[in-house]
Image 1 (cartoon, one colour):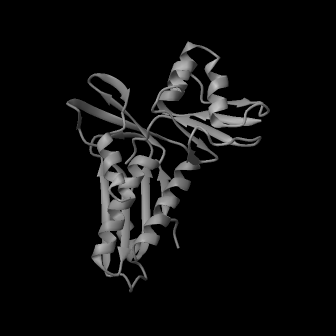
Image 2 (cartoon, chains in turn green, yellow):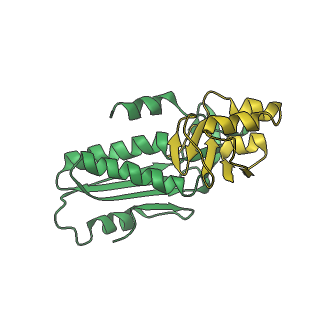
Length: 151
Length: 82
């Protein structure tokens, strides 16, 4: 079995990740995936590059906890979380969350839960390079509110 | 000794990614903040920001959390991944 968590510089391919989630997995009829990408605009700023920093060790531990909580809460099968670090250009993939389950409801919910908690608990930070220079992004209250909806 | 690490904007503001402190006289995360705040106006301001987050041994904790020799204590701004 491959690791559920990967923090990596290199890109990933959706098709490969889905294939791994489905391989020798006859019990789960549902596969839900989410891919996050770098968008070209943030708060009316033209973004060219995002640089992702993380806290090695704590990142993996916090993601493992989020995945464990999702497994307690929903009847899900396999989980994969990929988060890229380093410099990423507009349009590049940043994050992947894939969840399988017997039925779609649990897979949808668990996927959204993992993504919402990753946003507010996993120690990643984005620095934005734009036409206005470079700056660290501020956390959004809306992300905190979204995560709290699950509690 | 306690290993203290800093990330993202905090690391840049302090121009420091890690340091070590003697552990005696330090019993909580708040004690570390207090001791480091005495270094300069910049440290005082940066470490007393209301949004400052802290972790001990890779778990997010409150400032009242105990610390002991061998611990890794981290300070960082609110996270913005995903």
